[in-house]
Image (tube, rainbow, N blue to C red):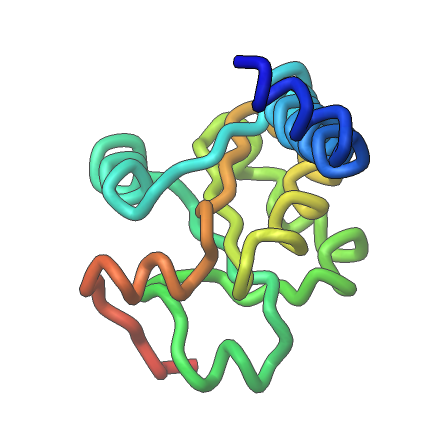
Length: 142
């Protein structure tokens, strides 16, 4: 124990960085829960699609979408989402799953939808690579 304390005192900046990183990770999870945005893995997404008729929205750019996307996903690029909220209005009560390549753009899109009254907003954790990693189908139909 004495060696650990000595190491911690000599490397206080590493421990400070660790505490800050842990705080940010925990804070972002708490923020998501408070906002009512949940992450879903591919299995959970499939359950929402099959059991609750979830709407899937791909917010990547056109080239990424054409290279491959989740079947039946609606393509609404992140930059166009704010202008196309009206066409999503009929889905306010249905679960909505948003995905991108990594999850960063999807989280911002979820915040926008929640702000505009969408009730059940989820984002695919890990984005499309996670979907592909679960050996789920990809479509190239536009």
